[in-house]
Amino acid sequence: MATILSPLDKTKQEIRLLKLDGSSTADGIKLSLSTFELQSPSCPRYTAISYTWGPATPEFEVTINGEAFKIRKNLHSLFCHLVEALSPGYESKTFIIDDLGTPDLAEEKRGHEHRN
Image 1 (cartoon, rainbow, N blue to C red):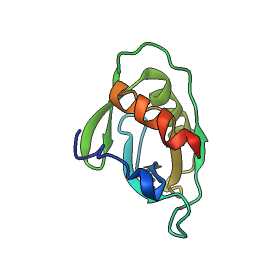
Image 2: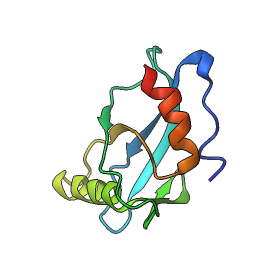
Image 3: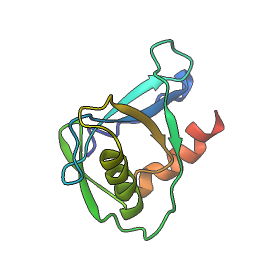
């Protein structure tokens, strides 16, 4: 997990964006996590997601950058719904999410990403 969640460079106004892979299924959510400078032309358009916090314990496994990662039930349900609602082979969708379910990142995000 440490390789997925490297620290953000606050001097560059970096954000983390998740991309839902077009080959995902409800049984296998595949995501890629990338870091972008907020003001950079290479930063893609994204949808912001703030979901119900629910229990603190992550419950469902997804794949992020090829590694297993646990997320909370509500976020997993959202991704499953999106996969089922979109056409097969849909174009990947990009999101910024307020918390991936990891307490150590929640504080960092509140102090950095949410100021922008």
